[in-house]
Structure formats: C-alpha cells, structure tokens
Length: 257
Picture 1: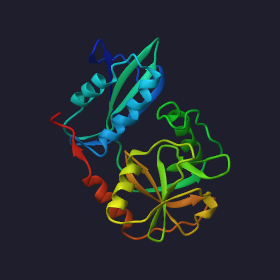
Picture 2 (picture 1 turned 90 degrees about the vertical axis):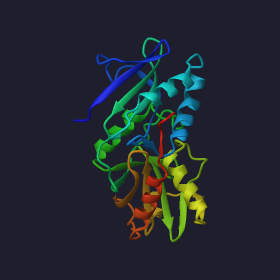
Picture 3 (picture 1 turned 180 degrees about the vertical axis):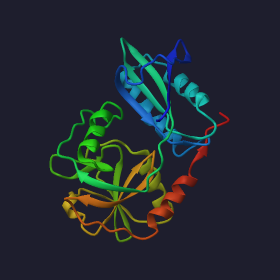
Picture 4 (picture 1 turned 135 degrees about the horizontal axis):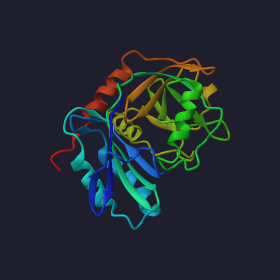
C-alpha cells in the first residue's frame, strides 16, 4: 500500500499532522511531480503552474513561503510522488501530501472518454477525481478527453502528443486543457535537436498509423499500444525509449536549496 504523509501549512510552518485526512476539503488547485533521489524534471514549471493558479483564487496566502518549505520537507532518497494543494476547508488551506511513487509504466492502452467531466480544464486539481473515475470505468491506462467537436484535448491524467513520420504533433492551444509540464520538456528537446513540431486539431479516428504518446510527470513517456474501438496505432522501435532517457536526464537535484 502506498504510504501518504500529510503536512498542513499553519502560521508559516509546515506541520506534519498524522490525523489529517488526505481527501478532506475542496481542492481548488493541485500539482505533483516525480521525485527520484532528490531530483525532479521541470520542478520550476510545476511550481509556476501551481502558484499561477493559486494566486487568483487565494491572493491572501503566502504561496512562495509555502513552496520553499515544501521543497525543504521533501525526502532526499527514494521514489516519491509529492502533491501540493490549495483547498477550501473552512477557509483557504495549503497542504503537502508526500506519497510513495508507484512503479513506472512505459506502455498504455487508450480509449476515448464518453464524456468530458472537466469543470476547470486549465486548472489542475479540481477535476482529478472525476477524471480518475473515467480511467477506472473504461479499464484502460488512459482515457482520452475530446472537445465538443471530437478533437483530442488531453488524457485524463496526461498530455497527448503523436508522431506522423518524423514530425511531432501537439494539441492546438485553442483547445482547453492543462499546460503539461512533461509535454513542454518533450517539446523543448524536440526543438533542441531540430525535430519538426506542429499543432493539430485531430480526432481519434484520424490517427491510424500514427505513434501516440501520453505524457505525465509520474511516468514521463508512455507509448500507446492500443486504442480500444479507435485507430490502429504504430510504434516506432526505440524512439520512445530514447526520448524517455533524455527526459530522465533532465531531472535536477532539488537540494541543497
């Protein structure tokens, strides 16, 4: 069973409270990242995404002090998947949940979600439970959300990109979705080595023969091996493995602060 420790921000200090219920309160904003022996990929982007959503919702909170204290409290060794949260719990609350990371995955089965449960598509946190329920309902590695016109938006807990030949395709930014940190790192690497990147408005049935990746902080890059009742997918041997190696090497040690 995955262990979880919960810390609550109280009077400028993170308090380790074993009585705190991890699922209490109404989550307004959340973010998480994979921490491996004190190193994280794109940590500054995770922090910026979180603080950028918290400040408009709770301008009275000292979010910078909270994030500094969070980094100081993280474990130095092992595999962890910490989550920071801003929530309503009889008033605004900042909280850190330190969780053991589950085993990494490199492959995923996909299915198109029958509905879009997102109420705040551009803010991470409030929709997580409903999106997770879709994955459970469909019994797949990732449920793919589409917009009202049937275009791919994102995975329930991931970003989606795909390959046509040697060109990397990403979701058109006009389609509402989360700004993916892992996706941004993959795009940066593509541009650094001269790989063409293009934005697309694409429906699942238009992806026959494409290689599809689902990207997340927890797993990095997962290659889609099947899209149930959807397109027939391609897997280019060795490509995802090579790019995942680059992604892992982008991790930077959080400590010392």
